[in-house]
Length: 226
Length: 226
DNA sequence: CTCTCATTCAAACGTCCGTTTGAACTATGC
DNA sequence: GCATAGTTCAAACGGACGTTTGAATGAGAG
Image 1 (spheres, each protein chain N blue to C red):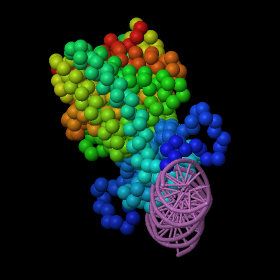
Image 2: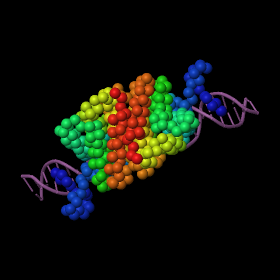
Image 3: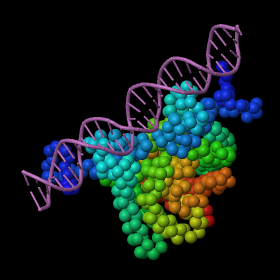
Image 4: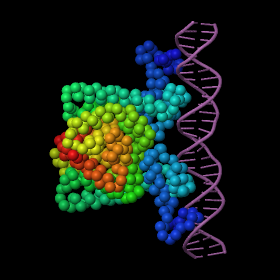
C-alpha cells in the first residue's frame, strides 16, 4: 500500500516528495471549480490538468460531486479552525464587540486564505464560488461545512448588539457572508472603477480586509433595525 | 408574416392573445436560468417547459447564449429605465444625498421587480444569478447591459460623498451591487436564522428593500475611507 | 520469488448536450 | 387559385459528459 506514491515513470528526487494523485486532483479541482463553477467544469478538464487518468476521480472520491465535497472540506477546514480559535480567544476575555467579531470572521476568510503565494487566491475564489453556486445542492454542500461556526457567530453578534432585533442580526450576518464570498470569488473585479479596488497582489489582501471590515462594522453598528 | 401567431392547433379564444413561442421561451428561460444557472440549464429543459420545439431557440435567437442575452436585455430594460428616471429626477433638484442615490438604485432592483405577482421574483432571481454567474463571459453579458447607468451612479455617489476616496466609493458601489444581486437571487435563504429574513411574499419585498437600504446607507456614510 | 492489494490505465458505456437539416404547416399577398 | 415567407416540426448530427470496466502496473509482505 504505497500511501505517497510517486507520479508515473517520471524522475523524482527525494526532495519535494511530489503530490499524490489525490492531492493533485484536489488542487486542480479547487482551481477549475473556482474558475468555471461546478457545472461549467468537466472531470476531463480536471484530470488532464492534474495529469491523472479520468478514472482516478471515481477511484479516489467516487463521483464528481464527491470530489467537490472533499475539496470544500479541505479548503474550509483551516478557515473554520481559525474562526473557532479567534472566537474562543475573544469570548475568554468577556463580551466581544461587533467589530471584534466581524474581524474574527472576515479575516480568516480573506487574510489567511489570500496570503499564501500562488494558492491563496485560488482557494479563496473556490470557496467564494461554491458558497453562491447557482445550484442549491452545491450551496448546501458549502453551508454544511460552515454551519457549526456560523451558529456561534450569530449568537455572539446578537449579544454584542443587544438593541438589534434578531432578524436584523441575521440579516447583517448573511450580508457579511455574502460580501465576503463575493470578494473571495473575485466576481466583482469587472465593476466600473473597481479595477484597483480588488485584490491583485498579496499585499492588497490586508487593505481589502480592512476596507470590508470598516464597511461591515458601520453597517452593523448603525444600519440594523432595532 | 404572422407576427403574433397562435400556439399550434390548440383552441384559442380572442381574449388572452396567447404568448408567442418567442415570449414563452424568454419567460421559461428566465425561470430556469434563474434556478439552475446558465451551464446547469439545458435548452431541452427550456423548450419542453415552454411547449416549443428545440429548434425554435436557434430559429428565434440563434443560440443558447443569444437566448440568454435576449432574456437579460428584456429583464434589465425596465430596471435601467426606472433607475435613469429616478436619477434624472433627483439631479434636477440639486445634489442628491447618498441615501437618495442608494434608494434610487436599490428599489428598482428589488421593489419594482419583486412585486408583480408570480413573475416578479422569477425575474429578480434571474438577474441576480446572471450578475454573478461563475462564467466571466456571462457576467460580462450582464455588465454590458447595466454599465451606462452604473457610471452615472458612481459619479453621483462620489459627489454626494466628497470626503470619501474615489476607490472607496467604487468599493461601496460594488458592495451595493453585490448585496442587491445576492438578495435578488435568493441565494441567502439557506443561511442560519435567515428563514424569515428573506423574501417570501410580495409584501416583504418592501421590508427587505428598507433593511438593505438602511444597511447600505450606514456603510456608505461611515464605513468608507477618506 | 510469490502473493497481495492499492493504484493507474486505455477503452468503452449510455446519455445528454447545442446545433443543424429539410420537410411540413400556416397565413397572408396577389 | 398560386406563390411567398414566417414558423414549427421530427429527426439526426457530432461531440462532450460522468461513469464503469477489466486488464496492466507498482511496491511491499511473507
